Amino acid sequence: MRIDVVSIFPEYLAPLELSLIGKARQDGLLDLNVHDLRDFTTDKHRSVDDTPYGGGAGMVMKAEPWALALSSVAAGREDATDRKPVLIVPSPAGERFTQALAHELAEEDQLVFACGRYEGIDERVIEWAEEHFTVRPMSLGDYVLNGGEVAVLAMTEAIVRLLPGVVGNPESLIEESHSDGLLEYPVYTKPSTWRDREVPPVLLSGNHGKIAQWRRHEQYRRTAERRPDLLAEFDAGKLPRADRTALGDLGYDVVDGHLRLRPAEGGNGTPAEG
Ligand code: ADE
Image (cartoon, rainbow, N blue to C red; front, top):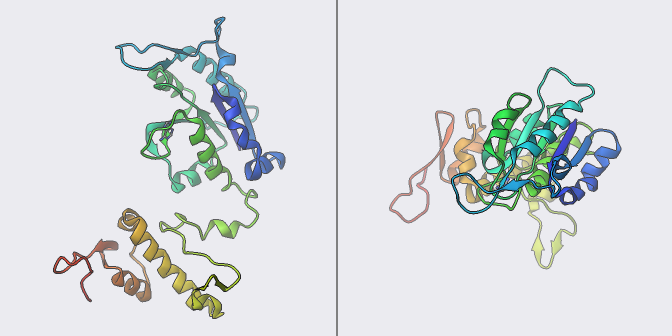
C-alpha cells in the first residue's frame, strides 16, 4: 500500500517512523511519504491561508497550494491502476471513522490524507479533487482537534495494522474490540492472585469451551454497560441459547434478529424476569 500525507506540519507525522508502522515501512509493506504543503506555494511568504469570504472568525486554507500538492501526489503513481486513489480529508464534519472503514480502506492501493488546519480547506478543492480521487471526508469522533494530523496518525495505525504481514500474530486481529461488533473481553496474566485480587477461576480451569463462553458473556456484559449503542446494531439472528440467556440476564431480548432492551418493570431500574 502507498500512503501520502500532505500537511503544513510534516514533523507532526514523525511517529509514523516508529513501532509497527515504521517496521512495515522498513519491510517494504508500506510506502509512506509525507509532503509539506508549503512546498507547493508560489509566493515569497509561502502562505497557505487567507480570510474567509462572507466574514467570520479564523482563516481558510487557499485552494491553489492544495491543488498543486494533490496533483503532484496523484501524478507520482508509478504502478497506477485504474482505481482512483482515495483522498481522506480529516474533519469533524466527515463521516465517522470505524473499524469497518479501516478494513475497507486497508484494501486500497493508495490513500492520500489532506491535513486541514485553521477553519478548513476552500471547499472548491474538495469538488475539484473528485475528478482525480475518491474523496472521503472523515471524522475521528464528535470533538474538534486543531488539525487533521492527529487524526491521520490514528487512522493510519488502524488501517496499516490490518495489512497482511504487519501484525505478527494475525489471530490477535480477530479477537479484539469491534472486530465482531462487540467490545473485547477482559484479560489477565500471572500471578493468579495479585494484591488479594483473583483471576476469574474459569480462566484457570483448562476447559476451553467454558472459557470461550465466559469470554463471550463478558463481551456482552461490557458492551451493554459501556456501549449499548453497539448492541442495538448487533446481528443477533443466529445466537446460541447460552448467548440469548446471557443477554436476557442483561435485560436484552432478541426480536427479529435484533437486540431490544426490555423496559424496566416498576421503574426500579432492574430488568424484568424471564
Ligand atoms: N480535525 C479536527 N477535528 C477532527 C476530528 N474530530 N476528526 C478528524 N479530523 C479532525
